[in-house]
Image 1: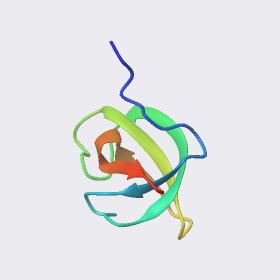
Image 2: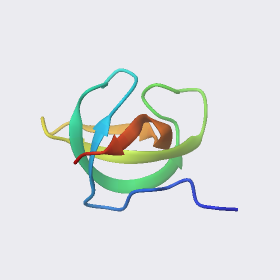
Image 3: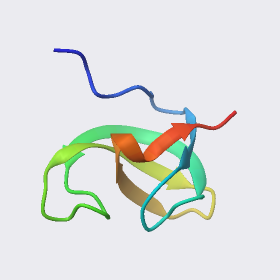
Image 4: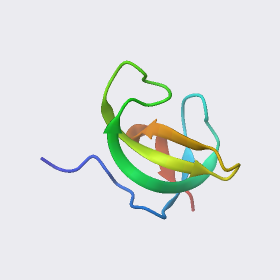
Length: 67
């Protein structure tokens, strides 16, 4: 089964959906837990340190590479 994680620690990303849509930040960790937009489900997620210095947990499907 392939890993759902496309990014590694230090990769720059943009959040493309949910509460923090449009925010940019840096991947800190890959985790399997509840996210800010899916609080009732344990899913593959990233801890993202946003440029505004807030740390959020978002689903792997909610981020894209920041080019």
